[in-house]
Image (cartoon, rainbow, N blue to C red; front, top):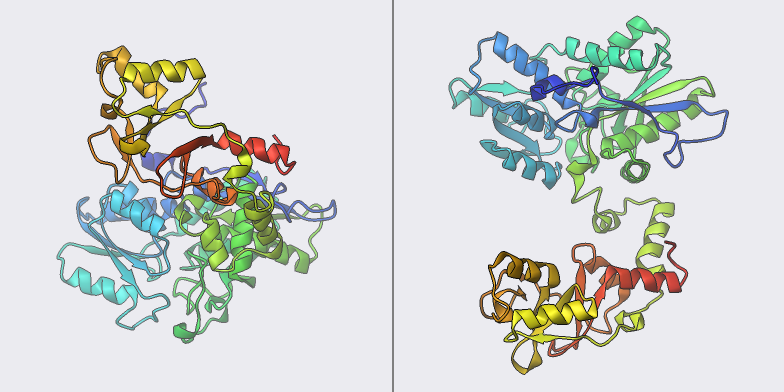
Length: 484
């Protein structure tokens, strides 16, 4: 037990992230003659990304400069650096590009940042829309504030990335043939390249950017003609912090390839974001082009967590709408959503008729009914037998046992009610109409957020049955389209 780290400040937990084999990732674990691919899981930092390391070093430099701990920091970037700085209890105004997912915006708001300013994707240096210019204007109007980004070369991050390089070398016992990483500001690429090449001169540094990005071209291009969805990597110009010669080979990865590979990583247990998908896909391309074989090791930086992308990468609907699934994954999803149900509807579940209680019935009688029939919940009807809500056995029994309710009290005082019903209740749930004609594919989506479905006629006058996810799984087992 002596090796377990005890209670620490959160900043002290940054770094020393795991290195894992990527052999279980579909399309990576290849034949015996292929290279070994390993991932440095930077999303295992407490703030969920590699930017925790950067934020820690920036805060240390601010302290050395005598900047007050409550000084306003105007932070530019896709969002991960701002998340890391907010984790370290700094007061922030965040300059976040339009491309950044809403999940990170919600996290920043919840962490109490002062404000968030959305900036134009691909704004060119020197233009009024560039984050540095916006940040300068904000700082000019807020005495004592400090502008923070990685692109302008305002911070000494050499030691930050030396630490990361040292971890990589230690975990690989010095056996690294290539490092593959997504490139945005250029700091990580520049400093990791220097540190690794000093220890292993033969190591190849592979820079990854989205298709249409212009970093590898080393020139400024028209950003309005270049768009991509993959977050945290790529620019419409070569960033100042990227030193010439730091990258040995550039690989551009399309959005569909990046997002599909990110999904494969998640399926294999590596819960990383889209930039990691691009980097792993690029690592496979590089190894093939370089003729790497068994005995060669490729290290991939896995930069941030998939939890930043709930509305995008993790949403089947969003992925379909943006055509980001490759043919294989698209086929799997379509079979899962439609093929396994083969056009079946709720009626095909062959549910028993519903047993209901009236909202004026005593709660004690409702508990007895559920106990006798081994029900976990029972529908509640009101005037003209219309469905108005439901009562759960566990909640009702707890109310009785605690003395908060009398067995003679009416059910309507304790039932869970649907929106649109009148009267008082413990809770109010939005009503989702489910009839015998509802496709089972729709019912499956309902069960993604609900535990029980009450089947009614189209007018919602009568409760016809109750369904749970177990009924759906039993149906699939009978159809031989699901294996327990």
